[in-house]
Length: 301
Image (cartoon, rainbow, N blue to C red; front, top):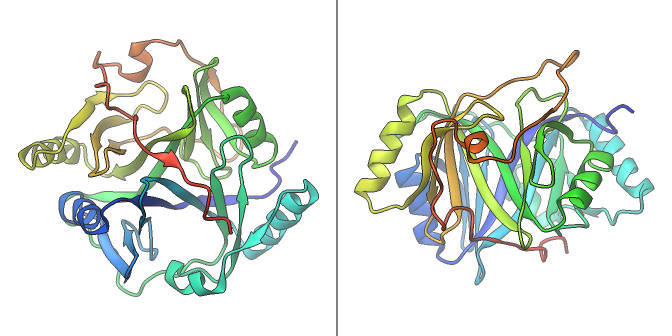
């Protein structure tokens, strides 16, 4: 069965944060994302030439607000809308008052029914006139978002069947790493089995392995807790570093990732449920790793 519509990329992640000023400073002054838009209750930051890679909203409860995907073309956006409507999903247009801040021409939102995550789809995204200039770290792009899910089998069945994601690797009843075809990256979204639904982490990809080491030392100097790494994942081959943002939500810097061809891609691998699968270097995460951040569903009004 072919993909119901074609993706271009994971475009942005929207988070609720308890202290907008503190989170703005963390992601810009310590990680190196560039502030690209501000309103009284929200801040947009970018790490590529698009207007936003991360959007922070002031809220009482920290967590995942939305996940935004750019599709391959306007025709794919129309196809996606028809696809979801045909499956009786409730499709909601992005409110007109938000389009300007998000810098997208048009789009829509749907709930993923097993977790309540809001998925946002659009095709035309504004590219700012001035190219993104890496500062503290050579960030390439927003890499991926990972969810904690209580019913991983049900969630993956929906994401594969209805949302058109493709598995790259999996650990039975434990984890799935998924790509958005035909984007080549090993995963733009992943699932990890957990006692309850929530945010696992948000990833930013860097272009130099030295950025992993420099970031680790910079964050330690500022009192930021490192919760896992440096290490190397078996599924994607990435070198990683995980740390906590001001709300205790987990963020990741990673270097390198397997890429898939559009045609003739390998089959997804069934990987062992072991510590070495998560870190080939033998590291172990701290208890705080991926423990904070609820899924906030109120945004699909």
